[in-house]
Every structure is written in structure tokens, then in C-alpha cells.
Image (cartoon, rainbow, N blue to C red; front, top):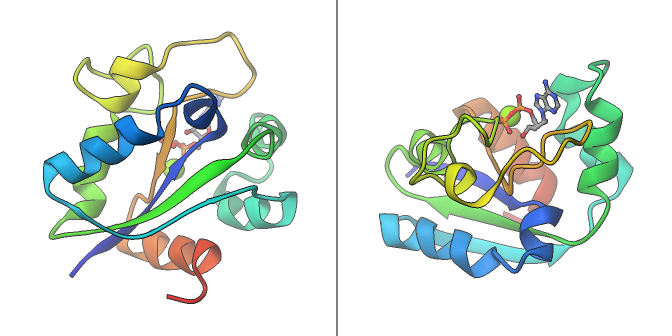
Length: 138
Ligand code: DAT
Ligand code: MG
């Protein structure tokens, strides 16, 4: 069965949207198989976002992701990687379709890094790598 790593980012936690995000995952029919609230440090975030190192938004991204607690989730189900990316909507919350998490719950805040409530793994390879970073015990 496929698994994906989902993060409720600091903006989502601060705005009390953890339950809303979990509800959308569960209502879609995916199973939550691991869940924890945590603070991510620079080292962990640099590993997680390695593909973005060197990009202009990398430092703001790491700083934002370390700015408060996050909730890390492993969800499971057939095609959950693709399915959660559809639930999340596209990266830019202004362009994300209404009905998606980002489209319904986020907007452009004028910050250096886009703040968009959730992360979701984008491939089978990424999900395995990211689950191992956040849940090495799994
Ligand atoms: P996604 O989270 O949709 O997979 P990504 O992996 O390309 O997007 O980027 C990681 C995060 O970095 C994204 O959720 C928001 C931020 N980000 C991406 N592109 C950006 C840009 N051009 N300017 C500012 N922030 C950006
Ligand atoms: Mg990504």
C-alpha cells in the first residue's frame, strides 16, 4: 500500500487548521498511520528540502518551517501521493482551486516564501525519503 508524508506547516498549526487538514485526509478515505507534533530544526529541514538548496526562497523556507510547531503525518492508501497533492492544490495559494486545502485556507501573504498550510510528498521516491527523515522508526 502506498504511503505519503504530509506536514501541517507552522501557518496551519498557528491558525488552528490541524483538525481541518486531518479531516480532509480522513474524509477522502486515506488512513492516518503515524502522526506527531514537533519542532523541526535546520538540519532536518535542510535534508527534507534538499532539492531546493540554492534557490532564492530556500533560506526563507527553512526559517518559516522552523518558526513554530508542525504536525507530521504519514497517510496510506492506493495512489495517496497523487491524491493528497490534489487535495492540497497547487503551490501558489492564489492559483490553487477553491475546494483544495491551499485554495480554501491560504492566500498570498506577501512573504519571501509561499506559506501554503501543507506539504505533501511528490513521488514514491520522495515519500520514502521523507518518511524516513520524519519517522525513522517506521
Ligand atoms: P510544493 O510544496 O507544492 O511541493 P515545492 O516543493 O516546489 O512546492 O516548494 C516547496 C515550498 O517552497 C512550497 O510549498 C512553497 C515554497 N515555494 C516554492 N516555490 C516558491 C517560490 N517561487 N517563491 C517562494 N516560495 C516558494
Ligand atoms: Mg515539493
